[in-house]
Image: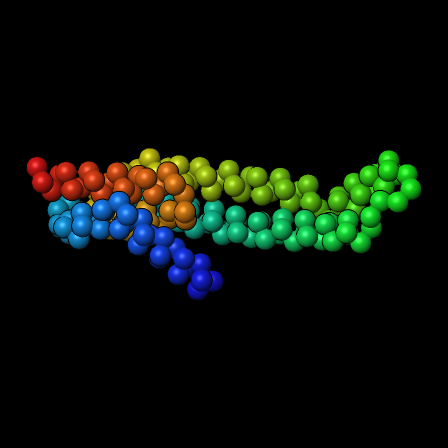
Length: 160
């Protein structure tokens, strides 16, 4: 897990440096707006954490079901009647719960995407709001782009 955190920190750092946003972030007045302006972002954090935890758990279960099924396939290469083997493979796939795991994975992906879309659509007005969005970005390009737009909007308000 530390590697993933390290990778995310590097990605955020790279993002800020590559977009020139680090200077804008450093120049932001910390008390320009009350963090209550970002309450809609803060309100999304518990839903994000829940959706992310569900997604991670479901993705793990789906991966295990697929791995078990593919291991069976490697160990039981088709021989003889192809139709009979395919029917047997379908029964084995069902016994490993691959289809059900796939459906749960798709649903958890949709749930997480819905939360991330809300995060991306909600502008941050303060540094605290930006940090909250960054915690939820999870590599999502739309959220990252919205953070960039929020930084530029903050810089614009600062210079006006």
